[in-house]
Image 1 (spheres, rainbow, N blue to C red):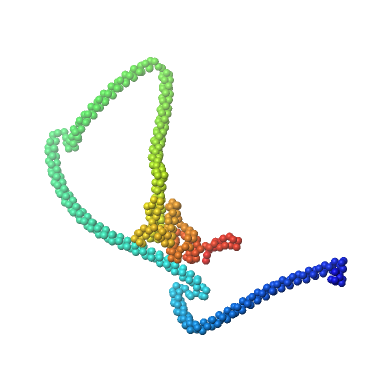
Image 2: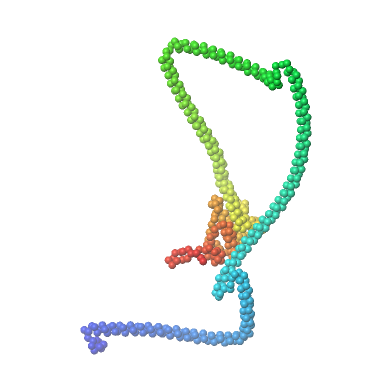
Length: 500
């Protein structure tokens, strides 16, 4: 078998055997490659045959369609001519419209955009239209407010004119009455002056007669002037009082003399045994003992005074504590009353009272905000057994009360926004909330409602509020100039970027 493969083959020629084996292996690989290429080529041929068949079928269909189109073309040749004429007319209309648009855009300081940049111009024009509508709405609101203020001013001016007329009339009447009163008072004063003058003249005459008579009577007496006589008359008038004082002084002198004599006798009685019984040293010793007792008594008196002062302080503290106790008792009575009210009906009475007060504060805050951003709607509380119930007062419809469900999407947003701001103001204990962030909430709004909502937010910004809006709606994004976008970085993290 080895010789049949090669004449040089030998059982011991291992190298040649390996070479033949390698050649056969390479040939087998080539055969396998050729077989694979054959199969691939066969598949390609089958695909090409199918494609040729399909192409032939399509060609037949195209030929049939071509015949049909030729027929239709011949039938619609007249229509094509009409369409060409209409196209020429449309081109002419387009040129005319382009001229008109150019004139209008020149009035807006704009130019016709290049091809492919029409969307940018349309976006700019839409933005300017929305700004115009916003400014128009603000102008309308300001005009309405101006008309209202003008009407109020005219009404106040009319009232002021009426009041001026009334004041002038009353002033004239008052001046007339004052003139009449002054005239009457002047007449009365003149009459009183004349009567007083007559009385004074009569009194002067009587005084002269009396002086003359008194001088005639004073002749030959010890009195030389009228002053001496007046002094004597005063003493005569005071004579009973003087005699009474003299009597009291005499009695007091007598009483003092008796006491003096008695004290002198007592002193003589006490001095006699002392002088006979005690010597000078004993007197000094007794005086020193008496001084010590006096000092001890003085210290005791000081201690008692200190105790009295402490007692007075304690009394003041007791009075203060007693007053505080009375105040605490009054507070306790109030708290017990409130506790009884809280416990009444399982606390429903207290809850309703608290709910009523909180509702009044909330509605006050909300209506103040609604007046700024809307000027039309006001929230009113409605009596309900289930708790808080609200109604909408519409000032544009004769102050009719409406249910919240009758509001449109934009109106509901305005009322909800004012209610949210009122809640935030109430939660911040009266402090102003200067910023507001709205996350989405615009996707379900139609164009008109969206315009109303954005205009409301712009009015809110005009009143000093910083409004932040998070939205994916393109129409909302175009209305705001200052924008921040979240851009995804290659590492998957987000990055804030200021939009141009």
